[in-house]
View 1 (cartoon, rainbow, N blue to C red):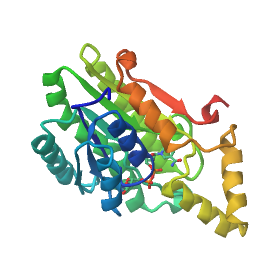
View 2 (cartoon, rainbow, N blue to C red; view 1 turned 60 degrees about the horizontal axis):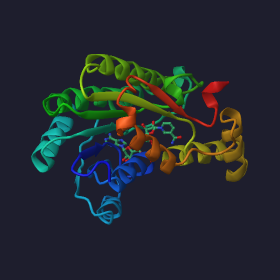
View 3 (cartoon, helix red, strand yellow; view 1 turned 45 degrees about the horizontal axis):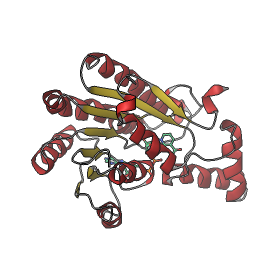
Length: 257
Ligand code: NAD
Protein backbone atom coordinates (compact mmCIF):
# COMPACT_ATOMS: atom_id res chain seq x y z
CA UNK A 1 0.00 0.00 0.00
CA UNK A 2 2.77 2.36 -1.07
CA UNK A 3 0.34 5.16 -2.02
CA UNK A 4 -1.95 5.10 1.04
CA UNK A 5 -3.09 8.64 1.89
CA UNK A 6 -2.21 10.01 -1.53
CA UNK A 7 -4.79 11.21 -4.06
CA UNK A 8 -4.57 10.52 -7.79
CA UNK A 9 -6.54 12.38 -10.46
CA UNK A 10 -6.62 10.31 -13.63
CA UNK A 11 -8.21 12.03 -16.62
CA UNK A 12 -10.09 9.87 -19.11
CA UNK A 13 -10.40 7.10 -16.52
CA UNK A 14 -13.91 5.83 -17.23
CA UNK A 15 -12.46 3.42 -19.79
CA UNK A 16 -9.32 1.78 -21.21
CA UNK A 17 -5.82 2.76 -20.10
CA UNK A 18 -6.99 5.45 -17.66
CA UNK A 19 -9.20 2.99 -15.78
CA UNK A 20 -6.30 0.49 -15.75
CA UNK A 21 -3.95 3.08 -14.25
CA UNK A 22 -6.55 4.28 -11.73
CA UNK A 23 -7.12 0.68 -10.63
CA UNK A 24 -3.38 -0.01 -10.22
CA UNK A 25 -2.91 3.19 -8.16
CA UNK A 26 -5.95 2.32 -6.00
CA UNK A 27 -4.50 -1.17 -5.42
CA UNK A 28 -1.56 0.70 -3.84
CA UNK A 29 -3.96 2.62 -1.57
CA UNK A 30 -4.36 5.90 -3.47
CA UNK A 31 -7.70 7.69 -3.36
CA UNK A 32 -8.96 8.31 -6.88
CA UNK A 33 -10.71 11.13 -8.69
CA UNK A 34 -12.13 9.73 -11.92
CA UNK A 35 -12.90 11.78 -15.03
CA UNK A 36 -14.26 10.99 -18.47
CA UNK A 37 -17.50 10.25 -20.27
CA UNK A 38 -19.83 7.25 -20.55
CA UNK A 39 -20.64 4.80 -17.78
CA UNK A 40 -19.54 6.29 -14.45
CA UNK A 41 -21.07 3.88 -11.95
CA UNK A 42 -19.17 0.69 -12.83
CA UNK A 43 -15.68 2.32 -12.83
CA UNK A 44 -16.58 3.99 -9.51
CA UNK A 45 -17.72 0.66 -8.03
CA UNK A 46 -14.60 -1.12 -9.35
CA UNK A 47 -12.34 1.39 -7.54
CA UNK A 48 -14.47 1.58 -4.37
CA UNK A 49 -14.17 -2.22 -3.98
CA UNK A 50 -10.45 -1.69 -3.41
CA UNK A 51 -11.24 0.13 -0.15
CA UNK A 52 -10.11 3.62 -1.16
CA UNK A 53 -12.09 6.84 -1.50
CA UNK A 54 -13.31 7.51 -5.01
CA UNK A 55 -15.13 10.41 -6.61
CA UNK A 56 -15.86 11.64 -10.12
CA UNK A 57 -15.75 14.94 -11.98
CA UNK A 58 -17.18 15.13 -15.49
CA UNK A 59 -15.06 17.99 -16.87
CA UNK A 60 -14.90 18.13 -20.65
CA UNK A 61 -11.15 18.54 -21.08
CA UNK A 62 -11.53 20.59 -24.23
CA UNK A 63 -12.88 23.36 -21.96
CA UNK A 64 -10.27 25.16 -19.79
CA UNK A 65 -12.96 26.54 -17.43
CA UNK A 66 -14.23 23.01 -16.74
CA UNK A 67 -10.64 21.85 -16.09
CA UNK A 68 -10.23 24.65 -13.54
CA UNK A 69 -13.48 23.56 -11.90
CA UNK A 70 -12.24 19.94 -11.73
CA UNK A 71 -8.96 20.98 -10.10
CA UNK A 72 -10.81 23.11 -7.54
CA UNK A 73 -13.17 20.20 -6.84
CA UNK A 74 -10.18 17.84 -6.33
CA UNK A 75 -8.59 20.21 -3.82
CA UNK A 76 -11.83 20.69 -1.93
CA UNK A 77 -12.75 16.96 -1.91
CA UNK A 78 -9.32 15.41 -1.23
CA UNK A 79 -7.09 18.26 0.03
CA UNK A 80 -4.80 18.17 -3.00
CA UNK A 81 -3.79 16.12 -6.04
CA UNK A 82 -0.55 14.22 -5.30
CA UNK A 83 -0.53 12.16 -8.49
CA UNK A 84 -1.78 13.67 -11.73
CA UNK A 85 -2.24 11.35 -14.69
CA UNK A 86 -3.03 13.20 -17.91
CA UNK A 87 -4.54 10.39 -19.93
CA UNK A 88 -7.71 11.47 -21.75
CA UNK A 89 -7.38 11.29 -25.49
CA UNK A 90 -9.24 10.99 -28.77
CA UNK A 91 -8.24 9.97 -32.29
CA UNK A 92 -9.20 10.80 -35.87
CA UNK A 93 -7.72 9.04 -38.92
CA UNK A 94 -7.59 10.87 -42.27
CA UNK A 95 -5.12 12.35 -44.74
CA UNK A 96 -4.26 15.96 -43.91
CA UNK A 97 -6.20 17.35 -46.90
CA UNK A 98 -9.33 15.60 -45.64
CA UNK A 99 -8.71 16.14 -41.92
CA UNK A 100 -11.64 18.10 -40.43
CA UNK A 101 -10.23 21.31 -38.90
CA UNK A 102 -12.59 20.97 -35.92
CA UNK A 103 -11.07 17.52 -35.21
CA UNK A 104 -7.59 19.07 -35.26
CA UNK A 105 -8.73 21.64 -32.68
CA UNK A 106 -10.40 19.01 -30.48
CA UNK A 107 -7.41 16.65 -30.52
CA UNK A 108 -4.93 19.41 -29.69
CA UNK A 109 -7.23 20.66 -26.90
CA UNK A 110 -7.95 17.26 -25.31
CA UNK A 111 -4.69 15.36 -25.96
CA UNK A 112 -2.29 18.26 -25.32
CA UNK A 113 -3.63 21.58 -24.00
CA UNK A 114 -5.62 19.94 -21.19
CA UNK A 115 -2.31 18.75 -19.67
CA UNK A 116 -0.94 22.31 -19.73
CA UNK A 117 -3.96 23.40 -17.68
CA UNK A 118 -4.01 20.51 -15.19
CA UNK A 119 -0.26 20.73 -14.57
CA UNK A 120 -0.21 24.49 -14.05
CA UNK A 121 -3.11 24.21 -11.60
CA UNK A 122 -1.76 21.13 -9.74
CA UNK A 123 1.85 22.24 -9.28
CA UNK A 124 1.49 24.86 -6.52
CA UNK A 125 0.06 22.30 -4.02
CA UNK A 126 2.65 19.69 -5.08
CA UNK A 127 5.42 22.24 -4.50
CA UNK A 128 4.00 23.06 -1.05
CA UNK A 129 3.90 19.34 -0.20
CA UNK A 130 7.40 18.82 -1.68
CA UNK A 131 6.16 15.70 -3.45
CA UNK A 132 4.23 14.94 -6.58
CA UNK A 133 4.01 12.67 -9.57
CA UNK A 134 2.87 13.77 -13.01
CA UNK A 135 2.41 11.02 -15.59
CA UNK A 136 1.35 11.91 -19.12
CA UNK A 137 -0.05 9.22 -21.38
CA UNK A 138 1.73 9.97 -24.65
CA UNK A 139 2.09 7.15 -27.20
CA UNK A 140 4.53 5.48 -29.56
CA UNK A 141 3.15 8.32 -31.69
CA UNK A 142 4.90 10.73 -29.31
CA UNK A 143 8.18 9.39 -30.68
CA UNK A 144 7.48 8.34 -34.27
CA UNK A 145 4.74 9.16 -36.77
CA UNK A 146 2.19 7.24 -38.79
CA UNK A 147 0.35 8.51 -41.85
CA UNK A 148 -3.22 9.82 -41.44
CA UNK A 149 -2.81 10.84 -37.81
CA UNK A 150 -1.53 14.38 -38.16
CA UNK A 151 -3.26 15.88 -35.11
CA UNK A 152 -2.67 12.88 -32.85
CA UNK A 153 1.04 12.65 -33.72
CA UNK A 154 1.48 16.42 -33.29
CA UNK A 155 -0.31 16.37 -29.92
CA UNK A 156 1.61 13.32 -28.66
CA UNK A 157 5.00 14.76 -29.73
CA UNK A 158 3.84 17.95 -27.99
CA UNK A 159 3.07 16.20 -24.74
CA UNK A 160 6.52 14.61 -24.72
CA UNK A 161 7.96 18.14 -25.00
CA UNK A 162 5.66 19.43 -22.25
CA UNK A 163 6.81 16.51 -20.07
CA UNK A 164 10.49 17.36 -20.51
CA UNK A 165 9.92 21.06 -19.75
CA UNK A 166 7.94 20.37 -16.58
CA UNK A 167 10.58 17.82 -15.50
CA UNK A 168 13.28 20.51 -15.81
CA UNK A 169 11.23 23.12 -13.97
CA UNK A 170 10.72 20.68 -11.06
CA UNK A 171 14.12 18.96 -11.25
CA UNK A 172 15.32 20.05 -7.80
CA UNK A 173 12.03 19.16 -6.08
CA UNK A 174 10.28 15.97 -5.01
CA UNK A 175 8.00 16.28 -8.03
CA UNK A 176 8.69 14.19 -11.12
CA UNK A 177 7.08 14.40 -14.54
CA UNK A 178 7.29 11.59 -17.07
CA UNK A 179 5.47 10.34 -20.13
CA UNK A 180 4.49 6.79 -20.94
CA UNK A 181 4.41 5.74 -24.57
CA UNK A 182 2.20 2.72 -25.20
CA UNK A 183 2.04 0.85 -28.47
CA UNK A 184 -1.28 -0.78 -29.43
CA UNK A 185 -3.55 -1.44 -26.44
CA UNK A 186 -6.92 -3.08 -27.15
CA UNK A 187 -9.23 -0.33 -25.84
CA UNK A 188 -12.37 1.21 -27.41
CA UNK A 189 -10.12 3.82 -29.11
CA UNK A 190 -8.24 1.07 -30.98
CA UNK A 191 -11.22 -1.24 -31.47
CA UNK A 192 -12.83 1.54 -33.53
CA UNK A 193 -9.75 1.66 -35.80
CA UNK A 194 -9.89 -2.15 -36.19
CA UNK A 195 -13.61 -2.06 -37.02
CA UNK A 196 -13.11 0.79 -39.52
CA UNK A 197 -10.28 -1.14 -41.18
CA UNK A 198 -12.34 -4.33 -41.42
CA UNK A 199 -15.18 -2.39 -43.07
CA UNK A 200 -12.87 -0.43 -45.40
CA UNK A 201 -10.96 -3.52 -46.60
CA UNK A 202 -13.95 -5.91 -46.43
CA UNK A 203 -12.01 -8.33 -44.20
CA UNK A 204 -12.99 -10.09 -40.96
CA UNK A 205 -12.40 -8.13 -37.74
CA UNK A 206 -9.95 -10.82 -36.58
CA UNK A 207 -7.79 -10.27 -39.70
CA UNK A 208 -7.99 -6.48 -39.33
CA UNK A 209 -6.76 -6.88 -35.73
CA UNK A 210 -3.77 -9.05 -36.63
CA UNK A 211 -2.88 -6.84 -39.62
CA UNK A 212 -2.94 -3.76 -37.39
CA UNK A 213 -0.62 -5.41 -34.85
CA UNK A 214 1.65 -6.95 -37.50
CA UNK A 215 2.23 -3.59 -39.20
CA UNK A 216 3.74 -1.84 -36.19
CA UNK A 217 4.19 -4.03 -33.11
CA UNK A 218 6.95 -6.67 -33.48
CA UNK A 219 5.77 -8.64 -30.41
CA UNK A 220 2.49 -9.35 -32.19
CA UNK A 221 0.72 -8.84 -28.87
CA UNK A 222 -1.27 -5.97 -27.43
CA UNK A 223 0.11 -4.07 -24.43
CA UNK A 224 -2.34 -4.52 -21.53
CA UNK A 225 -3.85 -1.90 -19.25
CA UNK A 226 -2.51 -3.90 -16.28
CA UNK A 227 1.06 -3.63 -17.63
CA UNK A 228 0.61 0.14 -18.05
CA UNK A 229 -0.81 0.32 -14.52
CA UNK A 230 2.34 -1.42 -13.28
CA UNK A 231 4.52 1.16 -15.04
CA UNK A 232 2.53 4.02 -13.47
CA UNK A 233 2.94 2.46 -10.01
CA UNK A 234 6.70 2.17 -10.60
CA UNK A 235 6.87 5.85 -11.62
CA UNK A 236 5.15 6.72 -8.32
CA UNK A 237 7.64 4.67 -6.28
CA UNK A 238 10.81 5.92 -4.54
CA UNK A 239 12.83 3.83 -7.02
CA UNK A 240 11.70 6.31 -9.70
CA UNK A 241 12.69 9.47 -7.78
CA UNK A 242 15.35 10.24 -10.40
CA UNK A 243 13.33 9.24 -13.44
CA UNK A 244 12.65 12.74 -14.78
CA UNK A 245 11.49 13.81 -18.22
CA UNK A 246 11.44 10.26 -19.58
CA UNK A 247 9.27 9.15 -22.49
CA UNK A 248 9.04 5.51 -21.51
CA UNK A 249 8.07 3.10 -24.27
CA UNK A 250 5.89 0.09 -23.55
CA UNK A 251 5.19 -0.81 -27.13
CA UNK A 252 6.13 -4.41 -27.95
CA UNK A 253 9.17 -3.13 -29.85
CA UNK A 254 7.30 -0.64 -32.08
CA UNK A 255 9.81 2.22 -31.70
CA UNK A 256 12.89 -0.04 -31.63
CA UNK A 257 12.55 -0.49 -35.39
P1 NAD B 1 -10.48 5.12 -24.44
O1 NAD B 1 -11.32 5.65 -25.54
O2 NAD B 1 -10.77 3.78 -23.87
O3 NAD B 1 -10.43 6.15 -23.24
C1 NAD B 1 -10.38 7.52 -23.44
C2 NAD B 1 -10.86 8.21 -22.19
O4 NAD B 1 -10.82 9.63 -22.39
C3 NAD B 1 -12.33 7.86 -21.85
O5 NAD B 1 -12.48 7.80 -20.45
C4 NAD B 1 -13.09 9.06 -22.41
O6 NAD B 1 -14.34 9.28 -21.79
C5 NAD B 1 -12.10 10.18 -22.09
N1 NAD B 1 -12.33 11.39 -22.86
C6 NAD B 1 -12.44 11.53 -24.20
N2 NAD B 1 -12.69 12.82 -24.51
C7 NAD B 1 -12.73 13.49 -23.33
C8 NAD B 1 -12.96 14.86 -22.98
N3 NAD B 1 -13.21 15.81 -23.91
N4 NAD B 1 -12.94 15.20 -21.67
C9 NAD B 1 -12.73 14.26 -20.72
N5 NAD B 1 -12.51 12.96 -20.99
C10 NAD B 1 -12.51 12.60 -22.28
O7 NAD B 1 -8.99 5.17 -25.03
P2 NAD B 1 -7.58 4.64 -24.49
O8 NAD B 1 -7.00 3.83 -25.57
O9 NAD B 1 -7.68 4.11 -23.11
O10 NAD B 1 -6.78 6.01 -24.47
C11 NAD B 1 -6.29 6.62 -23.31
C12 NAD B 1 -5.03 7.39 -23.65
O11 NAD B 1 -4.03 6.46 -24.11
C13 NAD B 1 -5.21 8.40 -24.78
O12 NAD B 1 -4.47 9.56 -24.49
C14 NAD B 1 -4.63 7.69 -25.97
O13 NAD B 1 -4.16 8.58 -26.93
C15 NAD B 1 -3.49 6.93 -25.31
N6 NAD B 1 -2.96 5.79 -26.07
C16 NAD B 1 -3.75 4.74 -26.41
C17 NAD B 1 -3.19 3.67 -27.11
C18 NAD B 1 -3.99 2.47 -27.50
O14 NAD B 1 -3.48 1.64 -28.28
N7 NAD B 1 -5.20 2.29 -27.02
C19 NAD B 1 -1.84 3.70 -27.44
C20 NAD B 1 -1.07 4.78 -27.09
C21 NAD B 1 -1.64 5.82 -26.38
